[in-house]
Image (tube, rainbow, N blue to C red; front, side):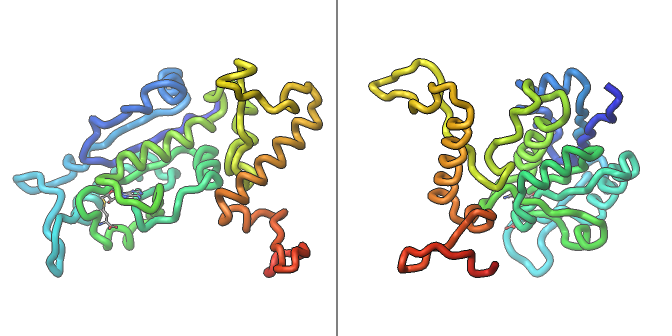
Length: 249
Ligand code: SAH
């Protein structure tokens, strides 16, 4: 395999959390096979005072502690020097929500350098002074960026060529085409009186594809109207029941 491997650098106060769950299953095997690499860097190693302090109280007062710009600046510069072409990411609830599209882009690139916050977060000047992309994994607050970094990496690693068993199994998954995926079934044929939809047993590939397509649309429309609204096939139903194009088209 001559492809350059995906290199992840994590800046964290808890390097011992890694690889953690990324050391098992698909990601773990790929790590053992050298398809990606992981380097967890201890932020505290960049503290310069006697107490090796990395945080301080917030300017303006208030609860909690803030990670210092000078310490993080040195850590970030060190990581960037080692891998100048990798995007620099700060896991942050204020970041752009992570999407499958961004995951695909990242997975196709050289890797990522990921800064994990703790406490109240990081000094804003660091984010302003370095080119740092902020990514959120959802509208809730974690106690640190490490689990977010693992989520981001897990999503990327499974897309690295050779990592997923069947090369095609990534393609019609949820979000890949702007839709949630259709439901799955497997043996036994009947379970607690419930059977597998007949069409899936028909062997008629065109009918199966059509059924899956319809099911994916229906699921998306019902569960994720936000996604469905952005889908090219979405139509707005007027009160009279007449179908018309989306308003903004
Ligand atoms: N005071 C901050 C939250 C700090 S939580 C605020 O209200 O915005 C501590 C750290 O956890 C953050 O610095 C960030 O790195 C990480 N974190 C928390 N929630 C996250 C989320 N939804 N996505 C990604 N990272 C998150």
